[in-house]
Length: 625
Image (cartoon, rainbow, N blue to C red; front, side):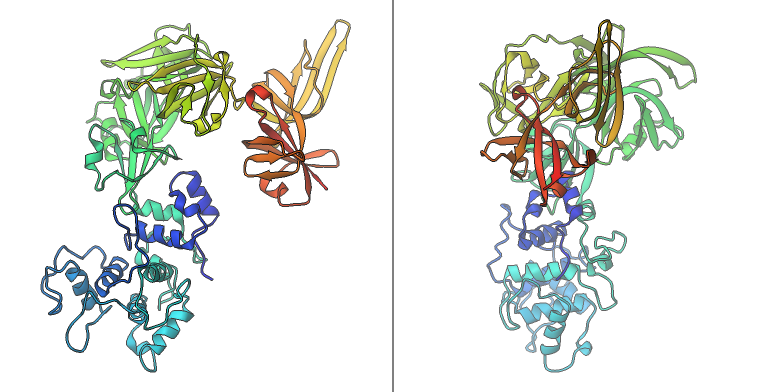
């Protein structure tokens, strides 16, 4: 049995949003279709239909052979001569047939014809694929095609193909034959796809395709999204698969100054909105040949020639300037923009202040200076730093930042809101409002903040007290939404392993040891106690100096399916996707995983937060049953 693309590495690719969800299905047909599409060996029509039940002609199969060969870049629109009397040079497949004949992959019939429209038999197709693997007629004995068909079976090229040698091939037969070819060893002993692309190592030593390497191979970009960007792509975006910031999205959600990548064979777009705005602190190693920059304390490799030029002595960005870094998928700078290069629409920023202080900088002449700055966590999940003229901002403040004519304008947002309602089950509406495709959502508590996606709020009722701020776009859709402790996702969850509370007369103090993520932290409160007991808990605020610690409420779980826990009485509880799982042995807690404890042999208890926050299970304890 051949190794398949569905692997732990595939799960990583899916998490990163690099591979379309079709790969998550168990069907090997869908796996093969995606891989061959990515390599431009076989693709469907404009609707993605592969028409797998149709027989495949000799001309079509020959085109696939060339597309899977070292000559795949050499085929032109027309052949230099007519390769056969029945294949004029203007025939759509003439150049492919001409190349295949020259390479020795295929030959015509004894009467001198090629018969391009005839259905190709399995045996004829197998011979061509064996030629790709380096085998020749002299490698086989006996009457044709007995030796070739024996090799076909021995090499495993027959997986998922049940046709006999003289059966006309369907497109599905061809799909599996070429997919099997990719991870089959050639006559020289190398995996075919690695021999075809020797510098990429797309197949590992176990014969397993690497999906991330495959997608990287087919991906083009990056470019910065500008007006009219769709017309610059080599394919129509109608019906294209879209990911934005690693999540399934839509073309309409892609914004100006997103960083865009694409794969033409896969008809897939990947857009990234992460950016960082702040003081350009350093250009390394020098402005004559810059390779990296430091902005707001973070260092970014320069990923494109455009970014290199902007930070060179020929560009406009200088140390000490306020710039915006548009961050690519690998975390480097795809573009570096000065303030006058930002558009008002794309640089209107909403967020919460996480830090306000005075920072020291050095300009390009080596002179030291200081500036008041604020650091924001924005509704798009970015952390940005801006210079401001006042030190009056505090952590927890909500602000809007606009850049107009190269000037930064910061103002506080009103946190009085009348918005309330229930988020629909599909996460697309809040009360009477539609949520924009690219809506930015934050949940806040004091100086803590977390980015949310609509699916996290699905079915939740938001009261006026939970909504700190919202704004709408020109279509009347909510495009920015900032909440107040609506989900509890910004808090820390773990186990209180030790509680020592003293409340005697004038003496009040507490010492608590809490395990969060397998790390123990000791918390001391010299003048107060929380009236809590050892066990699963929620910590509000920082672990070193929390605002409050609460015990969670427990419930026995009979089964866990996906992110839902079910009790014996069939009551359902949502399980947080970052729930902490511990095994309890001899009174000690050991960090574990949901996969391990649901595999059998454990009795499970879930511990959830308040009903207002959805009674979401944050901690799971597993005891051997």
